Length: 340
Image 1 (spheres, rainbow, N blue to C red):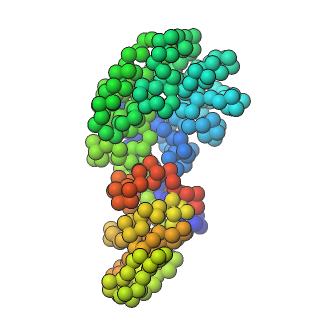
Image 2: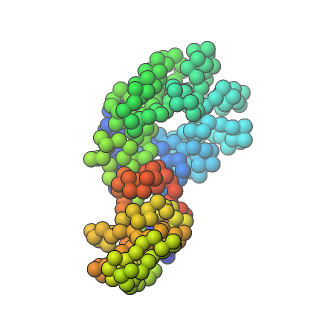
Image 3: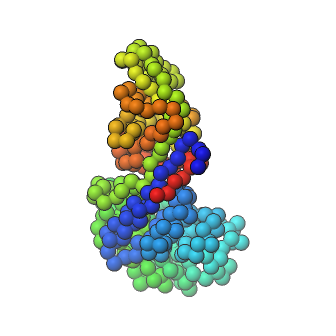
């Protein structure tokens, strides 16, 4: 571990978040979305911890992601279905989530066996239509899970109930043994949305898409960065690109090894928060590519010390205006990852 910035990852919090979501899912099985390399935290480490805790359903986006986890021996579903180029990669280690009539036909012709199917219930992103199901498009397929995706689960929108009813109308009309609709926010909508399988993502990793989850979801990732330099900035002097921050008093400033190339967004300029122990410290001036300045006046912090950055995703999102999803998945590859 030699990088000047690291991600401190709380494995116990990850597992407790999954258990809390599993309890909220009621009788439904609770899976885990581990696409985008476990939302940026490392899919292998996430899968191993959740599998040990009892998770038996994992979701990735692509077949390359599935292949990277195949040796772990866990059930995987590939959300983007199967392109013609994917057929050589398919195998018993993962099922495609078929999303279009062309994918259904491709899978049928390949004779590859069990699959999942995405049905569009109003989001108009991926999925076959309700009319295609009624017309028999899925007849003869061996379907494990028939699923759909909520467009507005993080809002109190009438569309949520409409999508739930649309999926419910398909019960018993295909060979599917399970129905699935709810993501993290959907789980918080109530038991009517859980069906047979829930598919949380963001909340596993400490995100809070609905206020109802705030009391039970724990932060999982904390960015920490090493202080490269401590410097005195006299009153009236300026800090950073475009000289946007002006010292109102003689100040002490820490320049840390962290910037937007690492995924610490420019949107945190003059808005972010770092911590020395329990002491909150403001980010000052512009976040640059590799460096961020922190006002450490009155705090004993020097070169080689480490500062932590706000691990509360909902709070960091509110401060920056950047979605919790982007804050997680935008984390760069220069961090050392330290699991606790």
